[in-house]
Length: 316
Image (tube, rainbow, N blue to C red):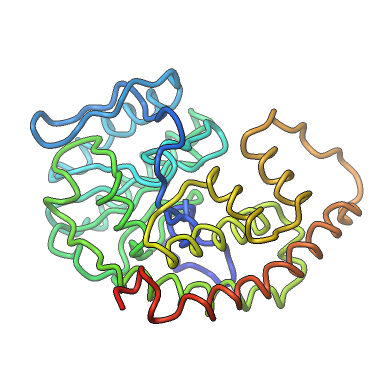
């Protein structure tokens, strides 16, 4: 089934300016963890450094092997987000990919792609986090254009945002074929800053009017990380990782206990599943939602007021 993104729903990890990188320009904070056995066409890209994450490497190998017979005109496959930026956490981070093809997929090819993703999803627990947009080579220029995308276990139409485009040009990983520089027009600083400001103002700020959303981990995590990463990009034009964003949140005055909660869920030991029983939120979830909303609203307003058209990233 083909759908457009429903609202409100958190942007994919690749999309929010907090990703300036998932959702995020991510500079490597330590050793990169990109898989070690992904094919790179000679002389067209830089192979990713080795990784000890064999499970992710196996999944990407299977995905690329499955794409080739279904997309005979596959020109490139790239990774962005945490997987390319050095902050990938197996089983927690999304696998954000972009495929470039010579022409738009036919309905038959779309069905075959859906079958490939569904097969991987049934056989590999990591595949649920594998997202891929499919761009025709002559349709890459417009950041507002919708492209065929597999995400959250269904085919959709989504844009490839200026944040994702900047990530690809800054630290994108070539898994197959040509480099982003060869096929994807660059994003200007002004385009990037305008997208970030609009996303903060028109998407994230209104979501604070819906308190129930903020009882969920994903909204707390993305909302705060987007703020930190967007603030840095608007301030000086750089992209930072989610790990770096947690430090920035402290500088911005976010509640320490909420920062610790996000850090532990992303980088700490895996938490046990919640016990069966009451569907009502715990006292902690309610308190965390209240703390997050009380901080995030004024913080978004400050960032938007401070980094307007004359911010470094705007090119003004």
